[in-house]
Length: 235
Image (cartoon, rainbow, N blue to C red):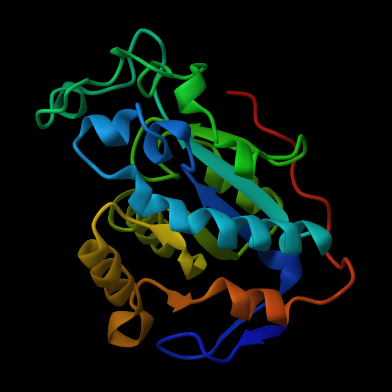
């Protein structure tokens, strides 16, 4: 067992053989100019600080053979899996499915829908396409994790208060223990980021634990000790 002593609200222990790194929605549509995030009026630069620590964590996890899974939020080209309440929400300059500088916004197969170059998944790392905020909704993520005996998740990605928070809550309801890495998750709104992390660790860790990625990297062994990650999921 590895232990992150400085995690809050208490030390967090995990077994590499039953732990996976989950990277949520690090997509061009959310992190780069011209994507959906910017169409909502957000400063996408607020999310860029997550890239360097997450890249370092990915390298460390790959070095020890930890299972790694990535998610992408997006929809079928005909938008049949995008409910009207989501499609019409708010007043963005462009809506889901509209053409943008990176292709149709949040549509599977478009350039903007894919993961940023700095965090490109390896061929053996599953990429799970999800139509909702949570990574468990309408996906086979739970099946993938259960088949491989995964019980603990190191959670990263964007945004803290939306897709990350929803996924952690879903995971908690399914019995997974989650450690959210504060410097590897981000929000367009710093105050939401802080509040989101506080909510996860509140009341003795009601949804999980929070720590910095450097603490996890320092705790990892120097040699591989995990089984290979699952095969890449087909969209």
